[in-house]
Length: 131
Length: 349
Ligand SMILES: [Zn+2]
Image 1 (cartoon, each protein chain N blue to C red):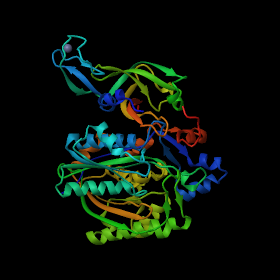
Image 2 (image 1 turned 180 degrees about the vertical axis):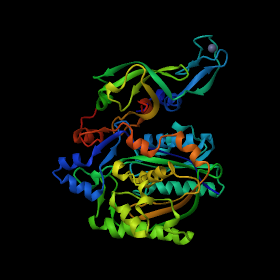
Image 3 (image 1 turned 120 degrees about the horizontal axis):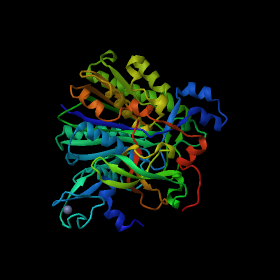
């Protein structure tokens, strides 16, 4: 069944909602309870920019079973336009299309297909921006 | 005046060529391509469905509209391929876009015209003053049975339209609908692939409804084919819309821009709406556009639009349909295609 955690994480998985520390301005993604920089506990919700560049990446040839239909695919650490970094699966791109510095945009995709009786999980992935 | 405030389209990156389907089934590839006037069709990736296509198209519509998503009071998605039998696609789509929860949401179904229905109801809501903005989407990841003629055309993509009463990119001047009980194409609950009644699909279904709806709206508006810069007719294949348009007195030149089927296939609920989006991508202020959808069962919706001065300012803010159709296509072989479309029976993981 669908986990409470997935449901709770929807604002970040669906809309890239991050926590911006109201004291020092540090942006946390995923959001945190305590600022890692100044230890303050108050945050405002901000939506992350959707464009960024690949900082580093690796090709996954032997994925967890639920991603088997998509192999080989690339997992990457992407730095968004505001400097925030996130780990993300690159959708629809053959591995040789993705490298350090490749420009990507965050898109909304199916994360897990699951069996037919299960709720479908959606969230963010990245795709290579047209060159 | 009421009409479109923002629009957006999306098609997946993957394609399969008509000849690769023909070769698989021992059919005459050239005859099929000639008969359908179709080169290739779009194929959804393994992580794409009507919901993700709707989100992508609507995000572009929001960018072009430049409005706060919270002001959207309704979200209607027309599709023949909603991922859930029970749970509206719109529930996920509004959450992903930051719309709602104060929002009316419903999924529409009417074979290939569910998208224009969603647009019509969204438009009616803002026109009645019930809400400031409303979102209507047509999107599909259509399936044709292996080897069936539909397999050459059934494709994936969609378009989204935000309706409103200010900052319009195109006014909607007239609407018209024409519906009858015609058993040309259907799918009963629990069946995986749709069925079509061969000879019913042409004259009594597609042509009767498309011609009647278009003649109806022309009559009601007092306009003639020559008054339009662009005309879009539902595209189940390449030939039908061109034949319908010619019968009605429209020229090749008027139909060319919205005729995206040769490179996209039939995106069902997303077909004529994406043709309209392709016209909005290049139209100039004052241009008139006619669009007539068709859905089996059967019915047609017609709209007459006039583009405003704001349109050219938003055209470049999001991907164009022609740009998406040309953008870094990946051509799949037949084997990969059936795997992506879930036509291979696998062990459950
Ligand atoms: Zn801080």
